[in-house]
Length: 235
Ligand SMILES: NC(=O)c1ccc[n+]([C@@H]2O[C@H](COP(=O)([O-])OP(=O)(O)OC[C@H]3O[C@@H](n4cnc5c(N)ncnc54)[C@H](OP(=O)(O)O)[C@@H]3O)[C@@H](O)[C@H]2O)c1
Image (cartoon, rainbow, N blue to C red; front, top):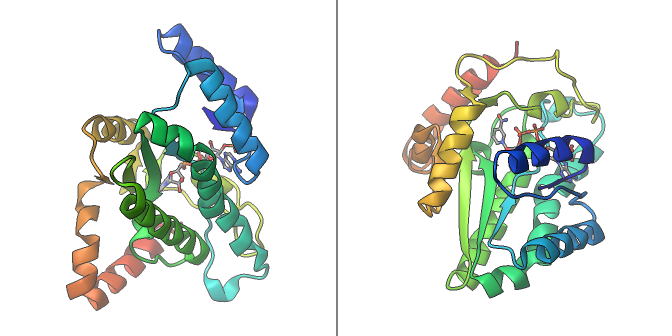
């Protein structure tokens, strides 16, 4: 497990190891290539190889594009959601080829269609989507690539850490999830089940699988629907 907050990671790692699993925590900033290399080296030193790379790290936003006052927000989101994932794949690709392993991207419906208040987030996840699709074509015989497309999930820190129009974290109080959001435990159970079954696309909730076809045939209706649903998440 890799992220920047090593104390939090160590707590989770201890829990896994006490429950009979085997894990290590490696302090990692995925925007830094040397840090990614260290994550790989520590993993291979402990486990001998890597079977799966789960691209989970991400940061979100909540701001209409025409209200953004600091455009560096785009770089900051892209650096983690897109370039950070590319850095991880770049670092791990040779080991994954050796083990004929898998890459799993924890992504979003917003990789398939834009959402209001999420221009940079949606763009970064579209970019990641395109990058992984290319990998699938280039290396599909050796490595499997899966995408987990999520709707709104409650119980994580994504909204509290989301960036506002000034490019700074909005904080926990800004907007809460509506009843539409899915519980984190249901979500993680479905992700694990999907990975075990080697699914190349996992949609949570499952109706998200209709986005591409609906966008093709009912584009205007879908845009109106998403705009309405997103506005209900404002408060
Ligand atoms: N929650 C939702 O509604 C939702 C919906 C769709 C998709 N997703 C996707 O699900 C994934 C997980 O998000 P979440 O909801 O669990 O949000 P979260 O609670 O905010 O978790 C984000 C994780 O990313 C890590 N991270 C951020 N920047 C990093 C960096 N530079 N280097 C390494 N790790 C970094 C954070 O750890 P540190 O801060 O300790 O580094 C944290 O563990 C994201 O990719 C997100 O886009 C979430």
